[in-house]
Length: 205
Image (tube, rainbow, N blue to C red):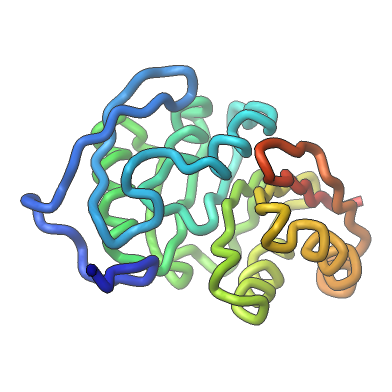
């Protein structure tokens, strides 16, 4: 059995690439994926729920896909809002390589895929979409969220999709308690629920 997982760093070779048909931003397209990343066979159920529940992004702005994988959220943002700058962040170099390949395939010139330290420290985000890596454990997940959610702009909004049985409701309560100390008054609301997933919205109050 392969030992590849979310944190495999090595980019895939051309021989390992597979082409997968998916529907993004209302379009039937083909993307490249490979083993050793999250959901290599297409769009996972949680990401689908998020895409079904969130409003379209604004035409312009600076957006973030946190934990981008091969790029379904970032690519959707970039396709719907070609005038925006979209940052796609992941720890997995293979996933980032695939996200870059897919951005080039789909003509998403405003999409920039990289590790967290490649995003300028003073960048703030008007929109954040994420299917966060819940299974990394609470400590890592909480650090991830307390690092990036305070970087929302004054009018910025984040949407997170979390499986109900993996702690969506407790995560919502934790954000309500923790985030005000880091970013001032915030609203943390459940704005969607489907197929065992919650969609949570975080915005500055």
